[in-house]
Length: 196
Image (cartoon, rainbow, N blue to C red):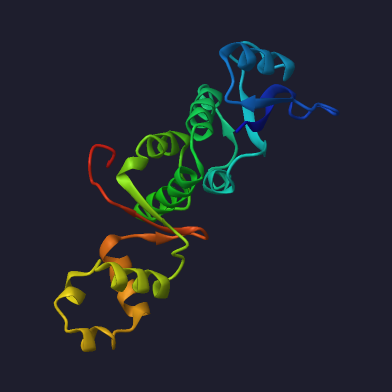
């Protein structure tokens, strides 16, 4: 998977007709240097990076609240993130999406940095993703069928049948501190080294 970005030199941003350069990530250091030259970014000069497409939507949604991506290491950080994402399969991308949402919830903010996304991308083993589980009821049904709540295991079958799956799912969601995405349910299964 290649992800495209637009690079704009800060010193030329107000010039009429200035268009910057497009770069596909992940890229080699030579390709990055070439894109900076095509964007006419002076040596040590500032530049701004914007999405040009092909990125998973949740990444740019999470980054969009931070304003423009710029700074000395912005391009290198995005390239590292693109390397990580380009190696992910569909399940890992969906796990990454949920991990990013959980991270935002834990921070209580709407913004995430590229560095935080890189860290999450390399810690996906700490998260569980259950595809198709997109609401409390579906989670509750899966929970009741799979014995995921210890309380349900101790109940007689007649009593267990009376339990509302949506309430059981909500209880599990709260206990897991999980999150629903449009593709499934994600929760942190480990509190190992990747936790801040």
